[in-house]
Length: 280
Image (cartoon, rainbow, N blue to C red; front, side, top):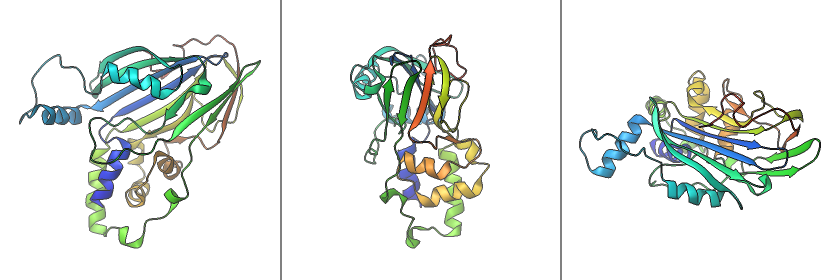
């Protein structure tokens, strides 16, 4: 059980309190990608101690927040797709955590691809999870038509746990408490925002002009202990499988329509207008 939990920690970015990706699309297919990543303070301090070989919390002031690496963020622009470029990157510190905020620009959303796996800080003892790309098609016009293709779990991922993988009840309780501690505050969100007036959409969830593709808040899972236990037992192998497992949990949003289709027209919507924007 514990080995499986650490495997899930690698998959889900244990300790990362927030990863938010907002894709804003203009009627001509250009736009911005806004990314905010925060690492929980206690996890950040533990990582810093290991890196510095300290035995007690560091009292240094003005340290650059973990995860903030401008060169790595510039390199990430290339991974996001052809023609994607970094506009802004800055360190970010809040009461809950530390990390960075970045803004990327793109000239054609059809070249953009988003790996729905959260970024993992530092080095991992586990091999990186295979990417699960969210991709886009776009047709300009009146209205413009945006199509979002979401990754789905493979047949292999859907296999149930074998009997010998199911832990004993006592081990379950201990493992679940461990799971709660590791993922406290975990939140991953990916949303798309047409910068115009939405004419029609088949979206399962919608928040004004923002349409969440996935919004997983681990704290919401705490109100569903049976689903939490199932999460520990099922050992999800990908974000797609995790979404399938959690789609009915109150407070967690997963787009069920695939592909997701949004038609929108030019309108009085600005880059900073929508609530929840990662603007900075």
